Length: 260
Length: 303
Image (cartoon, rainbow over all chains, first blue to last red; front, side):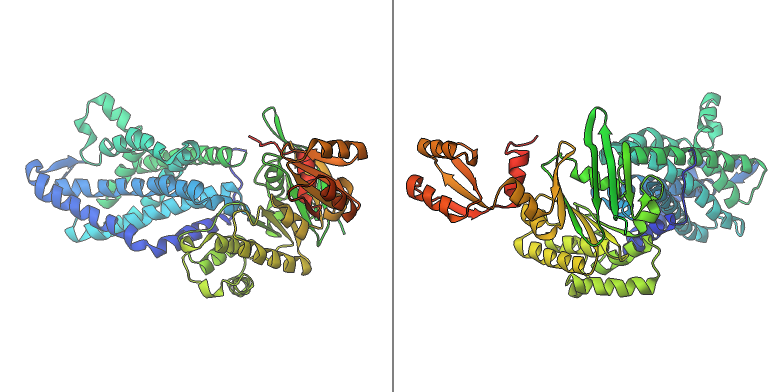
């Protein structure tokens, strides 16, 4: 069966994660509020004056205007990925939370789905906090930037599913260094977050467009600046396909790992 | 009434190894059924198949008359499982752990609140309801795990080594609670290393080894059948004593520095042995399930 059998019971796992998060929410909430401010300070005061205007989609943008939605896109990826890797691994392996839940009517497929939904929710929370921090600087166009929230939900689901694959496959928590250094960090640097991809040689540009974060950043930047070409549907579809594939592999990996 | 659990030819293979090798047993409603065995016997694997944590390799396993390979969510709705380790949420309080768990069963909030209150009283943790679980000692963790396993008011409770690692007070307190639950009609399936626990709690039990069932029966019957009613333990036995037991055709276990003589005759044999052969302390004690266990599964250390 390619598509796992999942009922609405999976939301109970989401709810458990939400209850726990609420207890320490301040710790989770502050970085996405403060991080963009640091970027604004460093790149706005620092690089902004040196770089001058950027051309993007036929418009002239200041460096900060270019950078801000990229930060949101990357933040969405990180929030989801780190939740379904480190946090889920701790729940699975150290706390044995999933073992306990498996004694109830929930299936492992439903647990994994609940965790992915929660990862996407962390992305939503992060995006909302970043939007709140960036908006006072006039870096987001309203009301179009409200669409950053559904974009964050889509990106969050995709990268949460991606994280789950590694949680199912890696034997120890230290193992997450591998995907972080080999995949996440390179994506972060070469996805159009910090500079337009046109700066790269053509072969590198093509490679960058194969990366899911590039599509997420492009979506984020487009809606934040109020630009809606039809191409955006293709970007969203790419992210959705990436997420769906990761989800199927993630569920398989987790079942193989825990149900023996 | 059909048995609460029915296993027929239940098998679990890991590659070449049969961790559970074609076992059959039935657990009747309202009884406490024990699965005993040395490490690696297949006890935990067997009960994990009963709550769907481990898929069967072959055979049949029915709980509440339902097939575990097809109707698992319906079975788990009526089941409570208290696992061996600590699977509580360390970030939540005692009461919150019960409430969160109730949601997996889709219990309405007011029902869950009432039930949680009753359970906290039952395990005497009412005063610690807001305590963070990470701060609880081993005994309290076990009691909370037991309470959590009962949140959905199950018809069957599965316990995997419920008192391993507990201090005597906690162990006895848990036995009291389990006895009370049994009196209220709960069916219990448990695995344990503590023969005293099995003898005290179980209506019937099986002793497993290498994935197979060696014996099945009520604790007292098993003791009578396999060991007798009394045991004389002789430290530093002499050759004369060994000759004596050979002559009399008595059942013994010769452990070198210790000779164990199984008797059925009460005190006379003990007095005779003491008078003729015991320089030091010979001990007469009632035969226990542990004697049955060690006779059947041996005294060697397992890997």
